[in-house]
Amino acid sequence: MQRFTRFVQLVDRACQAVVAALVCAIVAVVFAQVIFRYAVVRPLFWGDELARYLFIWISFLGAAVAMGSRLHYGFDYLMEKSPAALRGVVGILTSLLAVGFFLVCLVYGVQSIAVVSAQRSPALQISMAWVYAALPTGSVLMLLHLVDQMLPSAGKYGVEGVA
Image (cartoon, rainbow, N blue to C red; front, side, top):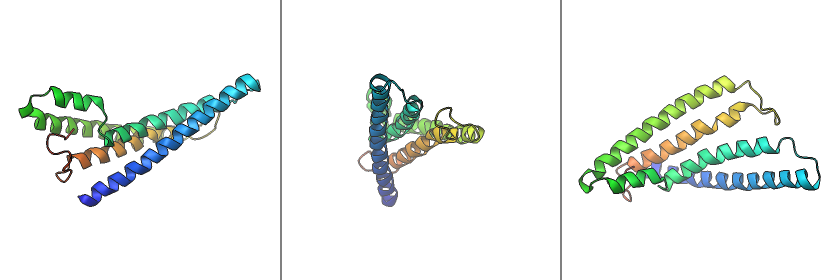
């Protein structure tokens, strides 16, 4: 179990680096779009589309990073508002519901990739499968964090911190 926790931490650090790189890329693309639109008066035809797709990936990967850092407000709120005697049960139930939700997102995300794989984006002409892959990728990463937090060896969380 310690190996799994270390693996999840390694994946999380890599995910954080990817999110940071994507944020830098979206800032650069939007800045270039503004410069080209107003200073050069020739807007980049692909800038808006790329920024949109980067934002989608940042959202799903950022959600996974937040899950790993236990920064999702809803889980903490439920735990705080639950009676002390029920916090362990509420934590387990919310974790199981979240696992179910992410499994559904994973299955339907993979199915949607198969549906859109032949479709090309209008400006960039990339397969839309790359854009849709953000959903199952984020789901897998969030599942890894949930499983790690639910393991008994996750001593920093304990039974009360499972959520």
